[in-house]
Amino acid sequence: MVVIKPFYLQIWFIILAGLVFLAAGFFILRWRTASLERTQAKLEAEVARQTATIRQQSEELKALDEFKNRFFANVSHELRTPLTLILGPIGTLINSGELSKSSMNMLKLAQTNAQSLLKLVSSILDLSKIEADEMKIHEKPQALFPFMRRLASNFESHAQHLGINYLFEYRADKNLQLNLDAERLETIINNLLSNAMKFTPKGGTVSIQIDDLGHFIRIAVEDTGKGILPDDLPHVFDRFFQSKAHDSSHEGGTGIGLTLCKELAQLMGGNISVTSEWQKGSRFILEIPRKEVLGSMVAVDQEPVDSLSHTVSGPEEKSAQGDQGFYFW
Ligand code: ADP
Image (cartoon, rainbow, N blue to C red; front, side, top):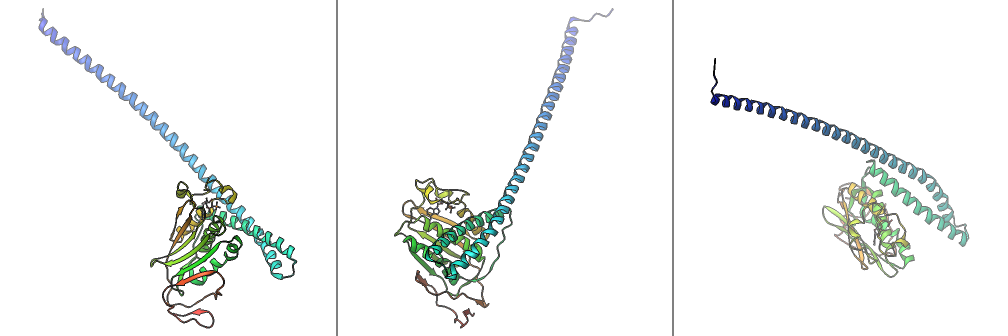
């Protein structure tokens, strides 16, 4: 008979206990790992589900946004055509000289309002096009001085009517000819001038200043109007922004004019910024690339020098002006 000594029994017991302990540890670890893997799989499934939901929601939002843009673009386009057709006969009647004074006044009122509506509708259409990436810049050689004179002159009678001093300061070569999108530039300048007149009281001053900076042409529209509150200043180019300053609501507007200006300026490769002091005035600065066109011949509008106060300075004209209104280089 084999007698196991108590000492060996103890050793066997310790080994057995160790093995049991190891086996238990192993099974517990496997169970824990399996449970962690199950939790991880569940979490991954949840993340995948939520990602799919977010992707679907963002696609729905994008589709909704595109639908909204298309809707705005279509409605604006449909409104623009009849408005243009209304303005045509009104203009013809006004120019006919066959109207009594009261009929003339009524028609001019209709014309002003139809023009405001057309301007608003065009702005909405332009913004929708920019959002849909469909706005294209069409650059053509343009003689800067007569072009800017014409844009500034369009506001002359408005300034007179409001009792505002209006200045045109041109400090660049009078013969400078640039490649630019005249229509878009006109939209920007019209918005800036119309805002400057809107926010400047009787007796105040609005000026448009054109400077040649070398690589850029700077067009500044400055006014001595009510200015912009410091808190509002960073937001004036935001879509639909209108100042909450006390009497702003009386001035009307939609808050899209400056957004459009910024977008168009950037599309043209330029930029627009503003400085302002509350109750003192504002200065909007547009900078567009100076893409000079040299060695070509371009018909230049013959702008009569009218009553608009203006200063012109700059380098001597570098060419002779032809009889037909052409500049030669
Ligand atoms: P709108 O004039 O149609 O409200 P804009 O985008 O042209 O929209 O202008 C946004 C806001 O910026 C205006 O409501 C006004 O508060 C402020 N603003 C713009 N131009 C001037 C200015 N020349 N002087 C003072 N405030 C201005």
